Image 1: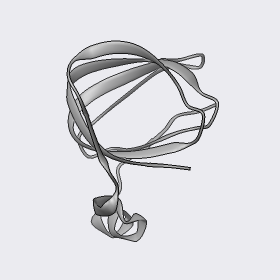
Image 2: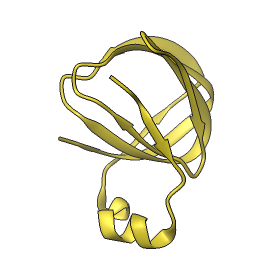
Image 3: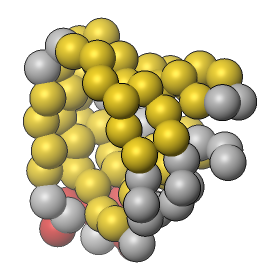
Image 4: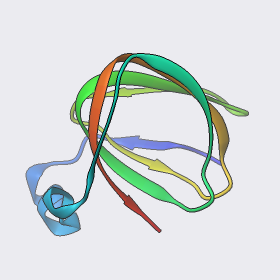
Length: 88
């Protein structure tokens, strides 16, 4: 179960309709999380890392991140995060 991190260009963001996705914000913190469905998110600001069974994955502003369904991980928010996200 791999977390995918990419640096999309504006065309890709427009194609995905990222600006129409809901926004989620979270302050510096650590918490466990389980993905019961796939999530794709675009990081508007902040930095975070997730600790997965496959290792740590870091991401931040400008990254498009895809979390697979069934992933059990621990989030560590290093700088307050604001992201667009979509499920499924």
